[in-house]
View 1 (tube, rainbow, N blue to C red):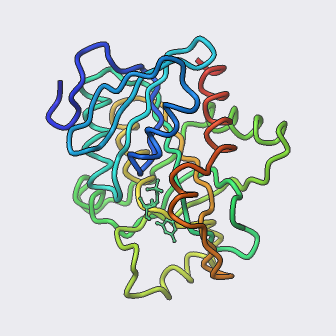
View 2 (spheres, rainbow, N blue to C red):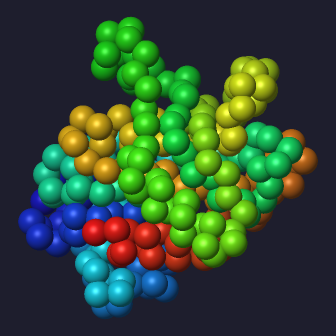
Length: 236
Ligand SMILES: O=P(O)(O)O[C@H]1O[C@H](CO)[C@@H](O)[C@H]1O
Ligand SMILES: O=c1cc[nH]c(=O)[nH]1
């Protein structure tokens, strides 16, 4: 048991899906996993383990933002022997062509967070996905014929940005979408020598203003979750 995850040693698989929303974690576990067992409910940040196509898989809510995700990712990687972490998140599309329901596969993450500037004493670390995991997911998305985009994402500390023009500038440099956790996930996976991938469904478009309601963000991302589970089950 760690401070924020109330599981015994061995309760958690070496593969963990990481939605921000703990109720999305519950939906994934109860919808897709066989024999799901809840291993933690500390602070209502729910975590479950079950099996998918014969492979043991866990799913753990992370909360919103890099400081929250970093707590759960650190404990999973440092204390529970987790080797593969995959964020299954929502994001805001920043390009005209990154539309609602499209999948965004993050190769890397820019951030306005100071976490890595402090960690690396001003050096500008480049948080990057695991290439083999990314390639497997993208191959699966192509085979399934799903709309997806592969490229850079923006992990912001501020959902409500005071300077949206900075986000617009990033869009001008080809950044696909904005969310709040990927930079920390990729950084911590690098620290612990684990594989990481961040896949996000576009829940709102910053270009058109369209948006999905909260209930869709909780239990509507069927294509992303199914494809992620197929990928990790086949990969390992
Ligand atoms: O839907 P999740 O996975 O929480 O991800 C996105 O949604 C939250 C903001 O609404 C942030 O956590 C952002 O990264
Ligand atoms: O962080 C996020 C997540 C979804 N949509 C946004 O606009 N921002």
